[in-house]
Image (cartoon, rainbow, N blue to C red; front, top):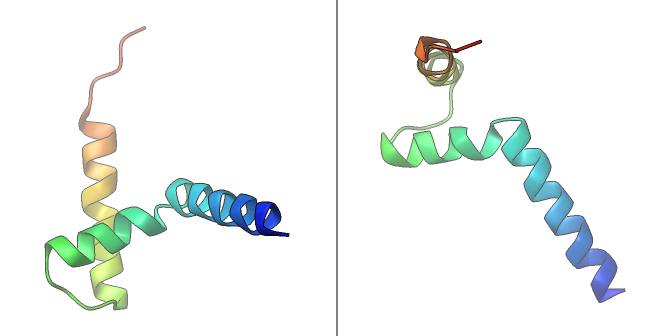
Length: 58
C-alpha cells in the first residue's frame, strides 16, 4: 500500500508541474502574494510572454 501512495504522490506532483500549479505557487511565494483571480492573470500573462518571447528555430 505504501508503494501505491508513493506512486500517487509522484503522479500528482507531475500533474501539478504540467498544469503550472507548482509554478504558480512558486510565483506567489516569490512575490509574497495571495491567490486571487488578478494574481493568476498576472502570472499567466508573464508566463506566456516569457514562453513566446523565446525565438524558435526551424
